[in-house]
Length: 202
Image 1 (cartoon, helix red, strand yellow):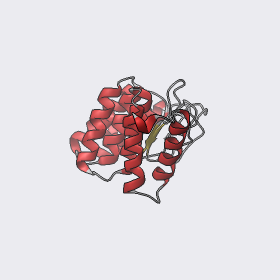
Image 2 (cartoon, rainbow, N blue to C red; image 1 turned 120 degrees about the horizontal axis):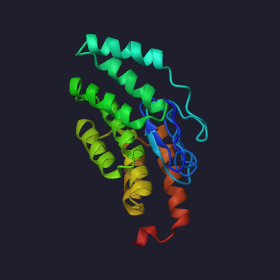
Image 3 (cartoon, rainbow, N blue to C red; image 1 turned 60 degrees about the vertical axis):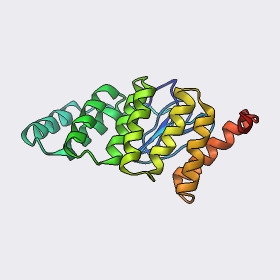
């Protein structure tokens, strides 16, 4: 996935990751799997794309074909996820969320889709709803590092809760110390602590 949302920190998704230039990029989401630190952003499950990259052109004909497939196959979660990913990459987060929600009705235990839905909520300027969805993801898989990384990002940038963000990133480092998510979390944590040296005292 690839999406940009100027003014919001990036996030990490199952199709990719957002960069943390500001914590997944530079205040702009990228859904490909990386984080660059100064201000965290959420992460999907793909690979990190440059934070300032514009969304790719939306393929309406491909989306229409997938919608036909979805309508003909009420139990086809994968097609619904593909539609969600397409809309997400195009920065059309409300439509992405609708398709992720539809997929989760079919496969409610898909932690990656659940987390991508939470990221979509975040980019819809609903940090509380995003955090609630991440909590559902962690109920499915308590050790899902991408979800915990995103919890930190949304706490930092959506709720201005730097202490809560730091705690989430420390959990990422603890649960998956050699992962890309842990590297991103450490980068974000170091950036926040450098800017707020008194954070541990609060």
